[in-house]
Each structure stands twice: as structure tokens, then as C-alpha cells.
Image (cartoon, rainbow, N blue to C red; front, side, top):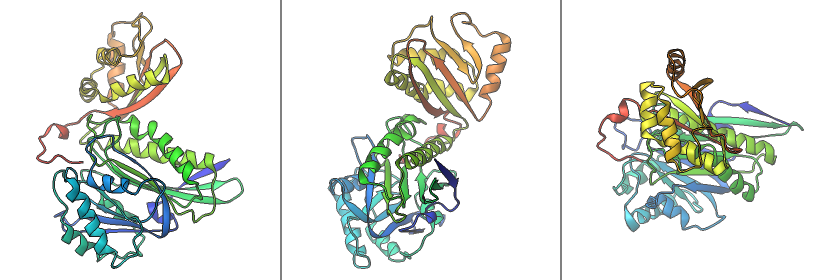
Length: 395
């Protein structure tokens, strides 16, 4: 048995790390745009990156280290993705760390960036600002604000995990992300820190598993960015670990953050769970659920609060899974909108379904009726603000 206790102040609850942020002059409103995460000793790091073939320079720089390396420093920046910048983009990162190493003993330093694609980093400006960091600070708020771009709210969470024997460890997360989210992975920078004494093999196993029903199950607008990054780092300072408890805490964090990404999706107004049950396999259920969460036709119906079950059925059929309209049933929350005996919405059912769709969050449940497969994906409408034309292609 174990207890999960919510904590304030994010990363500040995890021992063994230092973090902070400041304004380097890239955000003209004075908000933080440069941050760091540091540890006294090299720590284990596990990472998952975008599926986009055009991986940004910070990711390509990370991948040069190979497997199972340890790090003691991550530099974070917003406003510039350092993507599509070729070898020069990677060299720029090396140049920045070469200068910072004059002040800090850097071991396999990592950089993570978000912002506009296609522009080289302003190295001198970053180096000048980074030299002003208080590398012994522990300011979680300053760090998370340094990576925010189109986010409308701060994404930060922390837990103490208390075990039955009275021992405990902490785990915390900061995250950036609001648009360009697709089931191939969520557009974001996300950093999870823990002082649990977790083996590297468990870090790899549990992080990979946790994303399948969290970040890989959400959709906003169907795009996949060049900079998507999820990292888990462990200082192991607590000396305490329980795999079952850690798995639950990690899954709670990734699921919460994934839903926050959908909630904050470029002007979205509603968060919808697409629950598919009774498919021939879990894989087929996943395929249908993700098709629903990513469908522009479904998103417009959600935004218009139109209980048009035809768009739901059509998307399931187009997904390519095995299905039969004689066995299919569709519910908006608990309101039946379609089965073979009720192919047309009567006035009462339509009114009830519309009422469900006016809520900020609800569930569309699809019973396929062919097997035991099930999966839930999460999506949203695109909202008013997404319709505007953006001058920049942001990651």
C-alpha cells in the first residue's frame, strides 16, 4: 500500500536538483525565456522524443551521447526551436556549453528548446544571460515560466509518495505545451524529476509505458513538432523505491499533464474523452479512438455543440478497424445517441445530448460490439483562436 500526497511548488520538493530561470531578452514582455536544471552529481536520464523525422538540433545533440549516459545540467530556452538549422545548430549548442563550462563543471550537458523553427540561436545573448544564473537556486516557478510559449497557464505538479513502512520519495514535473499536439506524441517540453532510488531499467520501462495512455493518447490539431521532449531524471537521493508506487505516481503525472495540454490547446474550449470498447483488439480500439480525437470533422462538431453522431460513426468506419453498424452503439456521457434500434435522434435525446456537449468536458463512448479491445483517447475542439492565421510556425 502507498499514499500519493499532492505538494505545492513543483520541482522544489525533489532533493538533489537546482533550477531557475530569467529573461535573456528574447521575450519582450520581460517573462523568463531561459532556464536550467542542475544536479551536484551526474544523474540517470531517460528521454522520449518526437516522431517527426526533422528532429531539432537539441534532440540530435542529445542522441550523440548514446545509451545510459548521466548528466548534471540541462539548459532550457523558449522563442527559438533551433530546428532545421543543420549541423550549425548542433555546433551552436556545443559553443554555448563550452563557454558555460568555464563557470560550471558540465558533464554531458543537455539543451532543450522551443519556439520558432528555422533560426540559429543567438549564442552570445544566451551565454551572457546564462552567466547571470544563480546555479544554487531552487525556483520551480521561474524554470517552468522559462519554457512557456503559447501556454495560457503554468503546468507544474508534485507528489510525495508515502510507502506502508513510513518511508517516502518525491516526484515532480514541469511541462510546456498548448498546440501542435498529435497522437504521434504531444508537442511539449516536459521534465520529470524524482529522488526515488529507481534503477535505470525501470526508468526506461515505466516512462515508455506511461506515455501510451497519456501523451500518446491526446490530440489538439493533428500536427507533430520537431522538438517534442519528455525527460525523466532521478537523483536517487531518498534511497527509497517501490516499483508499483512509482508506476502509479508517474502515470498520474503524465496523464494529468497530457490532459492539461489538451485543455490549453490553442484556444480550445472543451476536453473530450473518446472511449472505444468492444473492438477486436486493444490495437484496433486505439486506432479508432485516436482517429476520433484527431478528426477535424469531429472537432468542429464538438465546438458547435452539435450531437451529430454520424461524424462519430463515419470516423470509426474510416479508421479501418473491423466494425458493424448492426452492433455499434454511441453514447455522449450516458445519453444513447445511436444503436440499430435507435438510428434517429428524437427531440428529447437530441436535447439531452446537446446539453452534454455544452459542458467543458465529457465522454463520447463507442461500443463496437465485436470483442474485448478497449482504449481511451483525448481531444478537444479547435476553438476560436486557432482559426486566426499565425505568422510563425511554432514548436
